[in-house]
Image 1 (cartoon, helix red, strand yellow):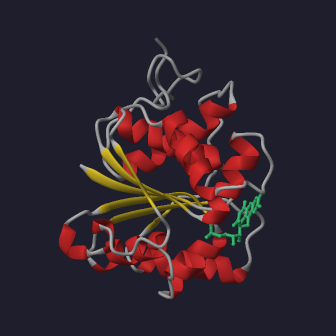
Image 2 (cartoon, rainbow, N blue to C red):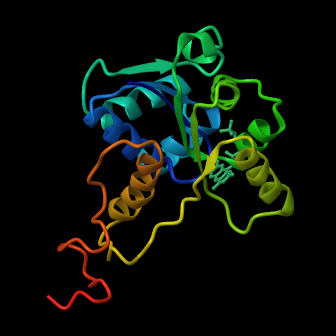
Length: 212
Ligand SMILES: Cc1cc2nc3c(=O)[nH]c(=O)nc-3n(C[C@H](O)[C@H](O)[C@H](O)COP(=O)(O)O)c2cc1C
């Protein structure tokens, strides 16, 4: 399947990285678009080189190399490439994830006032009744941001906050990130083993009524 992945400038670039790894590992073809602010956050959080990279494109390429599990499974798309196939409903792609999703991108999508490829793809998913999942990371949230989440939800999108459950007893940051990415893949109906399911033997809890 062809799936669009937008990585924007909210903290949590690793959500985008692990999503890219999981989608390519599952055999999907990913159209990846990193916003300029997304590249800043990747440079700071993932590459450890601070938030002022000399080249956004270079950051996005290195991010792709780090996380894509299958060479050739990723098309790295520029933020202004609104002529690419994902930007048109007629091209048939019906699945998009924005991870992480800044409140700024959330607002653009909610207001229908987008001006880059990530906004446009989200708009296409909503108008075509495809699957759109946004992973915002912000706290606390303002009334405006809450209303934007409501607007996207009313339009058919899924707002999936970066809020990892702890009942899986995560041991690493990657475990926590994978929980959120796994929940997104559940919404997208993509099989994965990113976190142990409640009630499965490798979850440290025991289901009520399970005394085995
Ligand atoms: C290091 C860093 C961390 C940021 N963290 C967040 C965040 O957690 N959530 C958020 O909504 N914006 C965050 N921002 C601000 C966004 O990057 C900013 O609003 C930007 O305009 C978003 O642009 P984009 O949506 O095109 O990526 C952060 C910025 C930087 C530089």
